[in-house]
Structure formats: C-alpha cells, structure tokens
Length: 116
Image 1 (cartoon, rainbow, N blue to C red):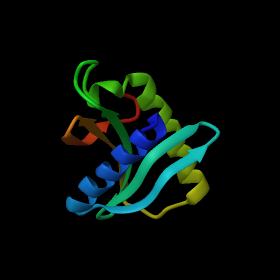
Image 2 (image 1 turned 90 degrees about the horizontal axis):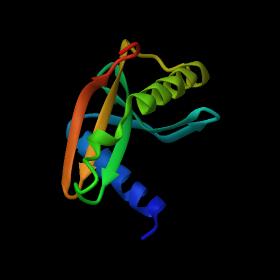
Image 3 (image 1 turned 90 degrees about the vertical axis):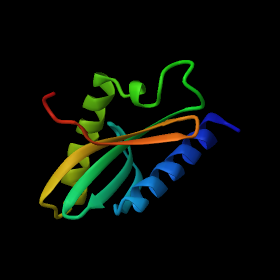
C-alpha cells in the first residue's frame, strides 16, 4: 500500500467517525496554492475544518502529535482561503483534529484556534 493509499484510508476512517458523531461532510481534500484541508464538515451550524493525521503505530508518536503549530497555521491559512473562495454560510467555525494511531481513532473538537 502506498503512502497516498494509507492516507486516503485514514481519511475515510476519519470521515466515518465524524458522520457517526453527527457531522455532515461538506467537502474532502480542499486544495489551493496554500495547501490542503482534509475534511470540511458541518456540526450543526458550525463549519468545521478537520486535519487528519494517521500513524500505523505509536513508535514515532501518535497521529495527534503530528499536528504541529506550523501545521495548524497552514490549515488556518487554507481555511481562510476556503472561506473567501466558497463563501459558505455558517454561524461559527472551528478546527478539529483526528488522530489515528493503529486502530485507535481520536477526535479532538476545537483542537486549536487562530492566534493560539
């Protein structure tokens, strides 16, 4: 299995986990010149930008640990681009992170904020 296939499999698992929690997937793999957002979803009237990180095991840290402050800033910049390009209607927005380590899927709501 290639790295890309493993990443896609992790994002599929993440999307299912979100749907089980009542999220509605709006878009996957939004790309622009600044980078990519793995999943854009709705949680009620909240627009949620979701970063997914997978690790096959915990030997090199968990999936959650892979979302560095640098990655958070990049996701925030891409989210700002998304808001301008797509002009979605929403009450609030937030950033969630899904860490997948082996078989464990962890969803962290409101994982970071702009300016943190």
